[in-house]
Every structure is written in structure tokens, then in C-alpha cells.
Length: 89
Image (cartoon, rainbow, N blue to C red; front, side, top):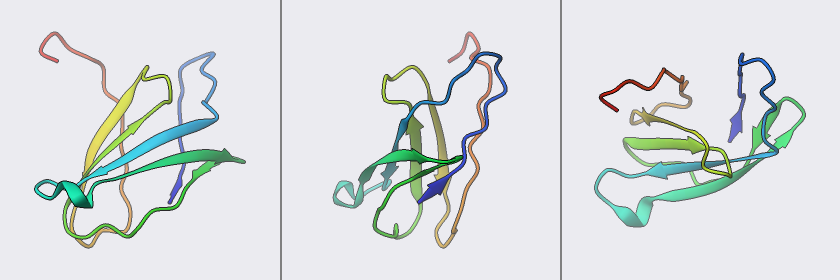
């Protein structure tokens, strides 16, 4: 896995590591968690190729933020974007 993190908040320093979880919607034994280490301008880690549709959760090691999304079956990549938190969240 290779992941690029783009942040535009003034003063934000990217963490040295991130955590990526791949969550299968119905089969827990297919769930994966991988620690991604920063290498230059990207984060890298190793995981098994997911089978079928997978939910994604990317977070910093301190639990200060997380991004969630979905990787459709057969997709080779995905973009996740932050949005402001609302009263309904």
C-alpha cells in the first residue's frame, strides 16, 4: 500500500505513521489492519489484496482524527477526504 496524505491546515505536521484498517462487511476473518510508515512524501505498508467490497478507516496513531470510505470490489485505489464535523455527527 502507498498512501499520500495532503493537509492544508496551517501548522499541521504529518505524523510519522498512520493506521489503515480494511474491514470486510460480513466476514470478520477478512479484516486487516496495517501500520503505514512515512517514507519521503508517502506512507507505505504491506497487506494482502482485499477480496470484494471493503470499508476503509484511516487514522493517526493518537486517535485525533480518522477518515472512512469504501473500496468497491475490483478497485485498485481510492481517495478519502475530510469534511467538517456537523451537529448531526
